Image (cartoon, rainbow, N blue to C red; front, side, top):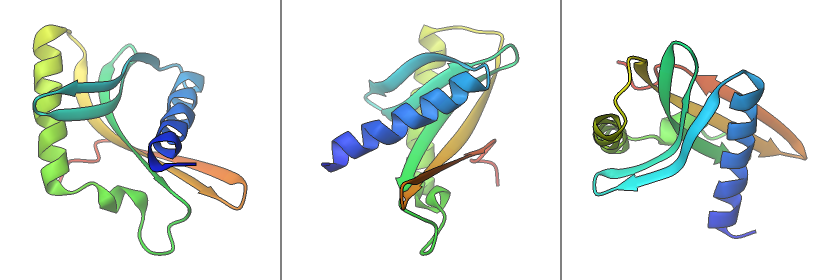
Length: 117
């Protein structure tokens, strides 16, 4: 499986995981001049902007550690543009969803407010 296909596979797993937790997927792979957001979802309280990170395991580092400060700034800027185009009363939040696919066992972890210091 090439990197793009594997990335889409991880995003599919993350989107399904969110749906099972009653999140509605608003958009996938939102792209603008500022950057890209893997998933945008909402529930009754939040609109979340999600960066999906796929890894085999966390033996080297947890997947969220691969979301650099520069990447966070690009996602925040892209989210600002998305919110201008889609006004909402929902509270925005930035999450990372880690998808680990090692040894035929898929493990998913959502880190809420992942960009907060």
